Length: 218
Length: 218
Image (cartoon, rainbow over all chains, first blue to last red; front, side):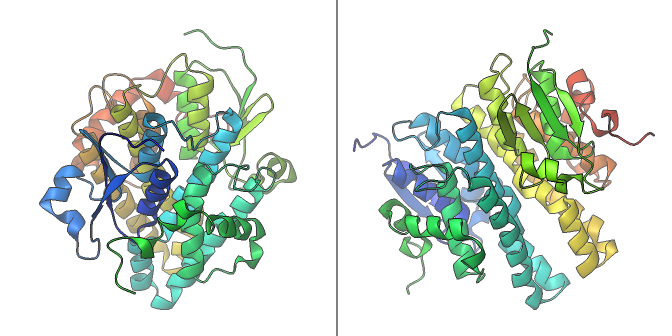
């Protein structure tokens, strides 16, 4: 597939699910990029260089020539518009809305409630034993919503037979639910089937945390 | 401005900031709509009728003829594409991305951490006294991020001299922060200025919680 002129740069952390979403999107669109690791555990997001790039200190950050964009949702929509050749959003308005809704269930109703800072709070204010039940509660609530939402729309993938935005945001969340929080996926047959489908796509597999340059040695 | 003939219905709760975002957007676009209240405190989102419309049970829900869309981000982007006559997103890709990022800071980093379910958890598992500090912490963190993000982009409004998506998402969050949680806005001069600008716009004022048909009488 055609290689684009300017190399994109992605500031990413190996295990950040928000970074992971964009890694998938870039792979699906056939876009080469330079991977620039930002070690969140070491506080590299507070370095003067990174703060200059992104004062808020979040990953991922996409640099495209002069343009600097952060926030996985904003980056995704930018890529979709700037590099439309392999579309990841259907043109049909209701199907497009469905993708955004599924994405936002992950992005607003699940992931923010199980990120590091929140889990740390739960650990401190209640107990370390409370972290996993809390995370599982929110993941399961969101997954149940997704099962209902996608039930009448899913095909081979989340909203039909083509991979799209919903899949990009779902894959990291499902993976984390299973690997980090031991969520019982038996209650979520559609998401289980989708997860199996993602495991067969090289664009998804190349984006997983353990395959990133900054992943710790196995 | 010209009122559009259409078939729009909005299922909304007076106090829901997610619903407020869409009320603002509809007003800004000059779109008439039928307001259908869903009393979240009474559990009306769990009624069979509402579940049939939206299995997930969230507000807002937009009904446009045969099309039913929920999730404020999905609804907003649907309206933007279906009714483009008064655009609420700039065409410049960077400015568009800043708007989406600002909206998503509200949508993912602030609001989900102060919704009813989460506050109930805090009240039960930690203590009733912990609710307000928890909410204030997350609002202030998000507002701090927004001050930094918008610093180099704001004009009369959040991302320039025209009202845009960021404003529609910011206004309800600030309203909630100030009115319900007593956030000290002195630390956020840009947001304070924006909030004052919004108070002068009838499209924003008409959308505020206290002005909705289902608001409790003063």
